[in-house]
Length: 88
Image (tube, rainbow, N blue to C red):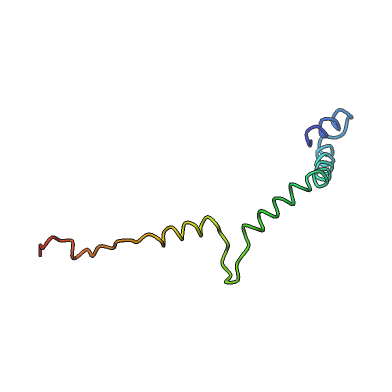
């Protein structure tokens, strides 16, 4: 959109510096009006990702699932001194 407006302004014999500024301002204004739903959806996703629970910790569904999988498995810890096979 910016480049289209920029080249139209250049074709109308505007100064390239001012054509860039005007095209940027118009493109920005149009994108604010047209991309409202996408901006709201992105804000909701960011807010959801950065939300915290009552303990002040971030809510992370995937991380919580990984934690529960790791906690459900029993980790065998081998005592390094008992693994010497009777050698002193």
